[in-house]
Length: 370
Image (cartoon, rainbow, N blue to C red; front, side, top):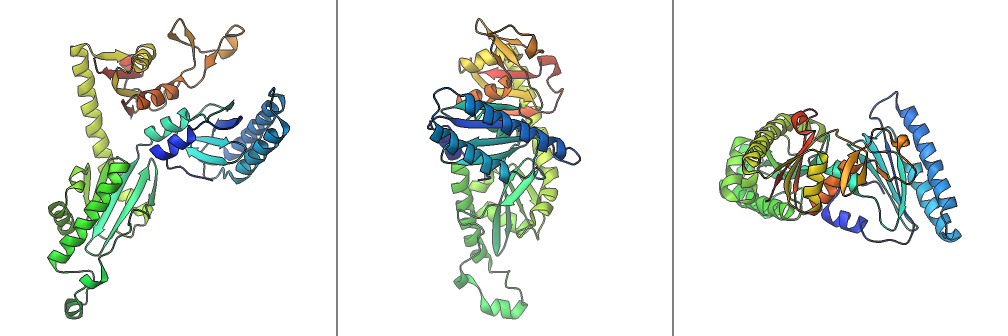
């Protein structure tokens, strides 16, 4: 199964304990040629390492080993390296497998456990800034699921929506030859139902919402409903209720960029205010401690910040040369992703910023609750 939509329900299911071994494979990938050949070799080597780990894992019975190897093999056969982003995640157990293409670089590793490794997936999803785009016209409304550089139509929860057939005005249609133009009250009723449907989606999957349509449709939508009042951006442009996704994403990108700039300004204001109140943390070790104590309210981290560490007396010690560590020293390659997952689990907001935006704060900072 190839599914890049991480919802709370999906994440909860992925974290469910499974019969041993639940195998997680991660590796960095490239978006463009000519690097796909490198990815092919790397994937082959990763598969060989997974086979070696499974063959040498003590206490693993033959049936379980054969079943999980079969699921991993099927997953690898389905991987399309022409469609990859910055990282690949394969999850497999004795019964099922999943493939995820991630918009974030991940370490190359094979992990065996009784649950899947999800921190890379959670961090990548947070970094990709998922959003909803609602495109409305007088006679049609479509909802679009956006994340990073991708956008696709959400065909569920009643979408796409059209007015009930009995609201058409045949005399009006015959008179003006435009079946998409109704009486205002009929349009208002239709848009009110659209607003309710969007509100239901947002209640389950809270994300920034962008609304697209001609000015009269947007005005009627705002007047008719309430859920869409929370929209963080509006694009006054018609003809996009049918997409296509590539054009809609291109048109909405400047609106998204403006929203990101506003959020960044607000975030830096929060960080400055936190310094004055002494509810501010900066640097990996300080922020990690605040997350462990569930004191972090907002965390800001640079997009491509990664750090290998070892834990010494409850503190994080950066590791630049993993091979230079002594025997028995545990080195964690993806502590930033683990921190992000723990922060989100603790109810903190995590915001990713462009590289060097937090150069003065050692690339990561936090606003604390107390």
